[in-house]
Amino acid sequence: MHAAGGTYREAMPSAHPPVLNPAQQRVLDQLGASGDGDRPAASEDLGPRLRADLEAGLAPLLAELGPDEDLTVSKHLLAQVHGCEGKLLAEDADHEFVVSVPIARGTIAHKAIELGIHWRGEAAPLDLVDEALARLTSSESWLADWLQTCSESDRAELRASAGDRVSKFVECFPPLLPKWRPVTESRLLVDLLGGRVRLNGKVDLTIGAARGRQAGKVIIDLKTGSPSPAHRDDLRFYALLEAVRIGVPPRLIASYYLDAGEARSEPVTEPLLDATVARTIDGARRVVDLRNGTVAPTLRPSYACRWCIALPTCEVGRRHLRVADVDAVDDLEVV
Ligand code: SF4
Image 1 (cartoon, rainbow, N blue to C red):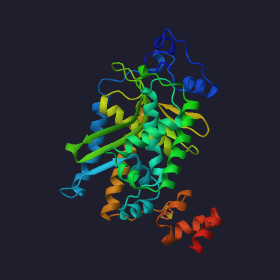
Image 2 (spheres, protein in one colour):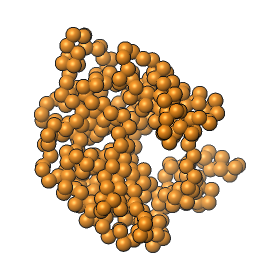
Image 3 (tube, rainbow, N blue to C red):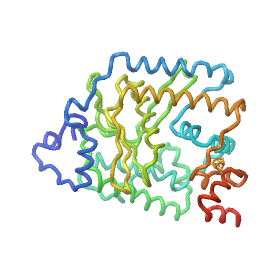
Image 4 (cartoon, rainbow, N blue to C red):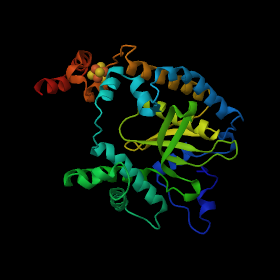
């Protein structure tokens, strides 16, 4: 991989390059750049133009916000509003954020992967997870309180599921050379319109960096489960934030599916960024209108109805599940 301009051989001239298994080699083949042809140069005005387009589209929203109200737009909010708007409003009304093992798992695993990058010698995945648990338990992290008070069984389940994620990552990814500038849980922020609107994202893993105006970074989201078009939209949003933030977009965006050991990647082009600007503006407008109650929510029933907190009172969702999945509704009737 030439993510940051160094091969294994260049980075470790006195050592034998590690022997890669086929899955690791596939990652190199899929995500590595083969030459300057894979590193398009961004035009000088790309970042400022994207920012100006976003601000022009979002500016009318300021009149709809309260005087002290700001709007934060994340990939999660955009996925919500472009999914079922009834679900978005139900989750808005349910203010309580409850940490659970599935929510905590990603943060622990990413911390463990980050420690693994800088660890001297080889570390077992569960040792990295234990160290990550210890560090985050005594940190200022949003997770610290939960980690300090969760039950022993939750902690054991968290350790096991984060360990599974880290093991699969170590198995499938070539060892990440510090020279490639790997960064985990990288926060991306873009403040627009004097800070009244903030675009906010956190990327699981980035490798590489731009060289001048030449794209070089690869943005990677680590996923369990099956591919979904929503994952691609999430990554496009990150690519937009990166392009506005530093003026050069990432070279490639990729979802890496740990269970399947395969990546789905996409090069970042200007039309892709323009489409993402439009999706971001549409989504933000719709969020403000829904929250102000000036439009009625459009219900879009899907597989996600299964986990929707509005399901007990949502006839549309119940009907959908009745047709698509009898068991889920049968369970609900019993409850
Ligand atoms: S149950 Fe389904 S249709 Fe109803 S609000 Fe939830 S996601 Fe939307």
